[in-house]
Every structure is written in structure tokens, then in C-alpha cells.
Length: 99
Image 1: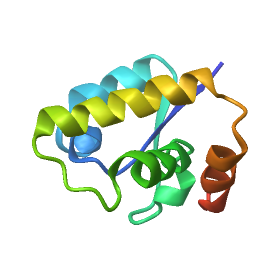
Image 2: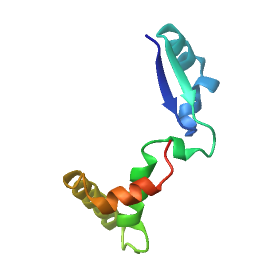
Image 3: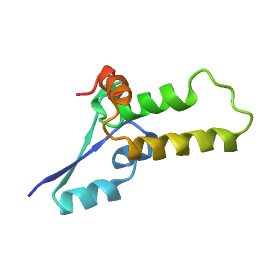
């Protein structure tokens, strides 16, 4: 069975073009590294969750420190995990274009 690993254009993911050992390993193990096009974050299915995180925990608020900002992100993730069916979060997540 062939396995495809979908990668965005984050620089460490481009190592198959710069370092042959990743490409060699993929060829030996029947793995295909498939890269999404540049500026195509809508193809990444996690992006809609980042949109909701930005909306609820980051937008329009000036944090006093990185610790406070990290706390808000952790609180949002914990809240989101407890409220999987929340309609407000679902509406914001669905408003993001995702393939």
C-alpha cells in the first residue's frame, strides 16, 4: 500500500528537495511526499481550527505577556475540547475555506 504524506511549504518540509536521504527513505518505503501549493492554506484541514482560536483567544486583545497569551490559548483549547458541538465555534470554523 502506498502512503502519501501531505506537507505544506513550511521550510523543514522541503527537505526532500535539499536532502536526498528523506526522498531516498520515502522511495524505499513506498511513501509519497505531496506538497500543497504555495499560499493554499485552505487545503490544510487544521486551518479552520486556527481561525476559531484567533477569533476567540487572540483577536483585539493586548496581552501583557507571552505567559498571559499562552494561558488564553490553553484555556481556549481546553474549553473547545469540552464543547465539541458548540454552534458559535462551528460557525466560525465552517466560515473558513477548507478543501
